[in-house]
Image (cartoon, rainbow, N blue to C red; front, side, top):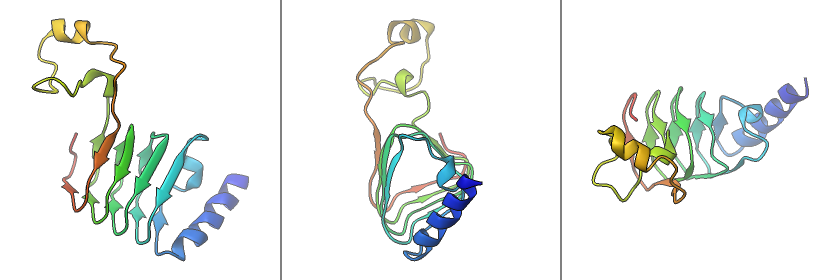
Length: 131
């Protein structure tokens, strides 16, 4: 009951800035810190980032999942079922490729500690069902 009230309260507050968050505030984790600018549209998405900033006129369609994403810039369009940052400990940025093409690489680099959060810059389009 309280969560429904909170979702309705924040939905009204967000609509004053022409923003929409279909999943509702109750879908966020307790430690989530999200900053959004005006005209942001978030359909039914999953946010697993501790701190996320979303720029003006950006939209994310239903089914998107954000893991360790710290910023999405202005005027970005992200399609349905896009997953960003999944298996963040298994995709080292210093490699030539993020593909784990041999078992030896996976075993050698299984527990990396230098994971960097994802940043998506201005005017970016990510297509349907992208990973």
